[in-house]
Amino acid sequence: MKTMNALTIDHVSLSFDDFRAVDDVSFSVKTGEFITLLGPSGCGKTTLLKLIGGFYQPDSGKILIDGSDVTKVPPERRDTTMCFQSYALFPHLTVAENIVFGLKQKKIRKDVRDERLREVARQVALETQLSKLPSMLSGGQQQRVALARAMAMRSGIILFDEPLSNLDAKLRDQVRFEMLQLQKSHGFTAIYVTHDQSEALAMSDTIIVLNRGRIEQIGTPDEIYKKPKNRFIADFIGTANIFEARIAEKIDGRRYIVETSMGRFAAESENPPQSDKLFVCWRPEDAVLTNTPRGENDFVSHVEVSVYQGNKTDLLVRMPEGHAPTFRIQTAGTVRHADGARVSFHIPAGCVKFLEATS
Ligand SMILES: Nc1ncnc2c1ncn2[C@@H]1O[C@H](COP(=O)(O)OP(=O)(O)O)[C@@H](O)[C@H]1O
Ligand SMILES: [Mg+2]
Image (cartoon, rainbow, N blue to C red; front, side, top):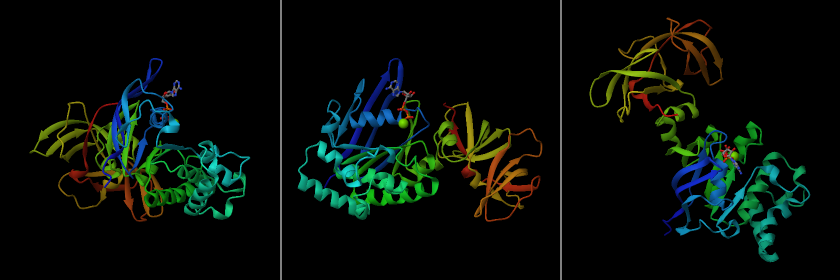
């Protein structure tokens, strides 16, 4: 049985002149795992992907693929293939020629190439499109050609650099599902780069959040969303109401009373707050709209803006005193809220998270 890690990044750093684009990054990826490097533009995602693919050499640290040190191995001799966005297709080559391009470069025999072409074309459902030029295909089909081309190389690891960024929202949603199905059935290991948090949450087994060349947090989508480690992550992923806080009282091992600009909160946390410079956060959907006070974390606010979304409504609200910042709450269902309306809500203490103040 194969239990080895497909990829290990061991204290890898790379600078461009004085600028550290990748700063002491370490993580491992299991065979068949879908892992996403998520972070804002310029945080070092592409640089890290190119290090994994062998297009850059790290200044320090090691890269292992299937347990062997490949730090100095050139791209064509690594078990990795890069998959870019659809516009990386050759416009003057047919779909079939695009798909086998890398195999030809590797001097793979024609009968083997034809065999691979048939196989991957079937897997991405492009059998009937093979003689067309890319420009004759839809954006989603072009993306599948790029994926087929990468899959034809039979690498254990496929490196994706924002592959869906050129597709419109609806198509992106559809191709997301298709890619994920293919990855699961094909079993390749995927290292996927995106700045789009919803894409990362939707697709990944594991998310690695990067900021300024460093890892901020590694976790499942659920862990990253529900237990953001610090302010940067809470802010970057999903929508969060974040308040500067002071501990007013420690009730017992897990329960605290904190003072914020929004008022006093009871907070329950598995992890005690790490510093005096403290922030707390809760998500808009944590708010429970109710007219029955629960005895703690009961708030009355006024609606500033109400954004109707069909299955839910997003509210921007303000505390009556007016001095607190506005914040977001979300209500399930389709009740309309007029601007200025009073809304009473409750935040369960377990939903109030302590954040480290970093970044
Ligand atoms: N070849 C290069 N030479 C100099 N600086 C670079 C080079 N490639 C990237 N950078 C810088 O390194 C940082 C990270 O870039 P990149 O990895 O492309 O970020 P991301 O893909 O997350 O948007 C950026 O500030 C970028 O300007
Ligand atoms: Mg990039």
